[in-house]
Length: 599
Image 1: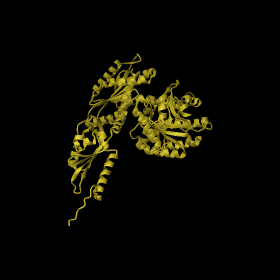
Image 2 (image 1 turned 45 degrees about the vertical axis):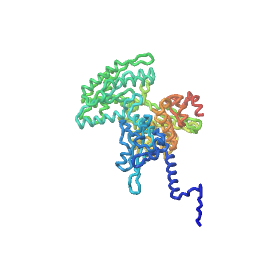
Image 3 (image 1 turned 180 degrees about the vertical axis):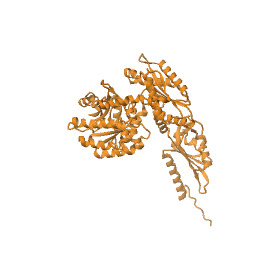
Image 4 (image 1 turned 90 degrees about the horizontal axis):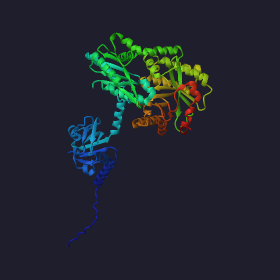
C-alpha cells in the first residue's frame, strides 16, 4: 500500500545561522553608514557605486537611487580649487596605485547645481582574501567654512585691514628677499618711504572716519603710479612703503616724483569741505653692497624726514655718504626729546579704567591700566606711538619701564596705600619685550615690592602677545617668579598672530586682553565678532578672564556683554587721564552708562 505524503503549506523556511549573521552584518553596515558625519561612497571593482550614505546625498545633490549603480565619475566631479581644472578621477588613481590616497590640499567638488565647495577626502582600496581588488571606499567632508576662515586669517596676517595693501610684516619680508637678490645676483631695486603731509590736520579737524577714507583713497593714487610688479604697503598710520623691483635709482627717483605730483593734484572732499594733501618720500637704492633691511628702512625714513623738513611734497634721494646721517636724522629727534624728558621730569603716568561686564561678574576691584605719556615744555602731550618706537629701536625701553614701575610704586605708597577701595585695587603695568630680556629687571621689580611695601596681589603685569612669544622662555620664567609673590599677569593684543592659541597653553596668565583691532569692528564685521567670541570661549575654557580693548561705543559694550566677555576698556568707558583726575573722578561720568550691566 502506497504511503501518502503530507504536504505542509504556508510554513516558513527556517534560515540558517550563517544567513542570519550576514543579514545582521549588512544591516549594521547600513546603519553605520547612515549615522557617520562624513559622506561615504562605496564602489565595486569597476567603479560602480553600491553604497551611498545620507551625508553623500546631502553634499552631492544626488539621491541614493540616482547614485547607486552609476559609475563614480558620473556622480563625483573633483577639481583643483586654485586653477578650477578637473583632477584625475580618484577611482582611476586608486585603481592604478592600489593604496590609500588622501586629498586634503586645494581640492573641491562640484554638485549638480554647479556649486563649488572645498573638501577633505580619502580613498581606500578594498581587497578580498586573495588580495584581489574588489572596490573602493571614498570618504569626504565639506571644509569650505574652515578653509575660508584659514584663507581669511592668512590674508589678514599680511594685509592692512583698512586699505587692503600689504602690511609692514609682508613689506619687511619682501624687502629682505630683495636685499638677498641684490647681493646674490648683483641686481638693482629701490625702496620708497612715504609720509603724508597735512594728514594730521584732516584727521584732527574731521575725525578718524575722514582720516580713514583719505588713507584708502591715497593708497589707490599711489598704486596707480607704480608698476604691476612693484609692492605697495601701508607701514602704519599715514606711512606707506613701495618696493620697486629691478629698478635703477634714477628711475626710482622719477617714480617718486610722479607719486608726489599725483598726490598734490588729488583733492579730498569731506562733507563738502575740500582738502589738499601732499606726500614726503625718501628714496633709497637696494644694491649688492646693502646687507641689512633695517638699515635701508632707517635710511629711507631719514630721507623722508629730510624731504618733510624741506617743506614736504617732494622726494629726497638718499646717497651713500649720508646713509648713517639720514638713518638717524628722524629718530634722533625723539631720542634727544626722551633724554630731555628724563632730565626735566617730563614723563607722566596716565590711567585708564578697566571695568567688569555683567551683573554676574563678582570682581569688585578698582582696576586701572597705567600708561606713559611724554610732555613738551609747553604742556603738550606727546602720544606714545610717536616716541616709543624710537625708544624700542635705541634700547631705551628698559629705562622707561623702570621709570614707570618706580614712579607708580612711589605713588602707590604715598597716595593709595591704606586708601584702597573695598574689594581691592589692581594696577596694570606694561613691560616691553626688550625689558623681558634684561636679566636684572626681575630683581629690580622684586626690590621695589620690598622697598615700597606694595602688595603684589594689587599689581597686574601686562606683556604683549608678540613679546611673550618672541621671548617665550624668559617670559615664562619672569611670570612664574612674580606669580610666586602674588602678582597677576595679562597677555595684551591677543589674537594678532596665527600662533596665538599654540603658545597660550604655555603661559601661566590670569587675563587675556583681546586685540582691539577685532573689538572695534565687532558690530559690522562678522569675522571679527567670531574671533572675539572664540578667544573669549577658549580663554574661559582655560580658566582665564578676558578683557576687551577699544570699547568705543555703547553698542560694542552691549555686544561684549552678550558674548559674556569679563572686562572692558576703552574710550566709551573713560579716556586715559592723569592720575589725580583719574582717581578723583573714578569714572563718575560713565557710572550711569555702565549701571545696567555692572550693578
